[in-house]
Amino acid sequence: MTTDAELDRMYEAAIADEWEEINKTPERKYPEWNDAIKKIESARELLSEAAEILKAGAELVEGSFEDDRILSLQSEAYYLAADVTKQVERMKSA
Image (cartoon, helix red, strand yellow):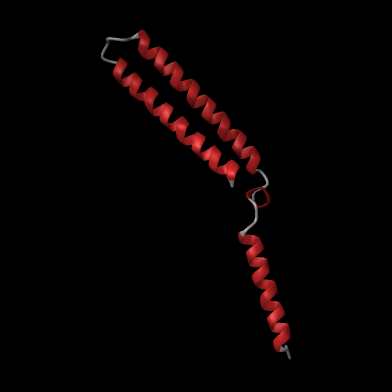
């Protein structure tokens, strides 16, 4: 038969294990966390580069009926790059 003291120890051990699982650092819970950050940073750089290329393309057809559409795409790429930057910051501060 299990005593009250043993049940209390088992309960405390289970609670401690659960607390450890919940409070694991991302690097311990997800070993590739830092590699993921590097990949996401690469995506941000590519998005920023794409925004600059789209801007240059729009300048080449300035005054045509396509320049506004290209600048709209450039703007979306820029905003997406900014969102990716925020994601990287969140992951680095976790």
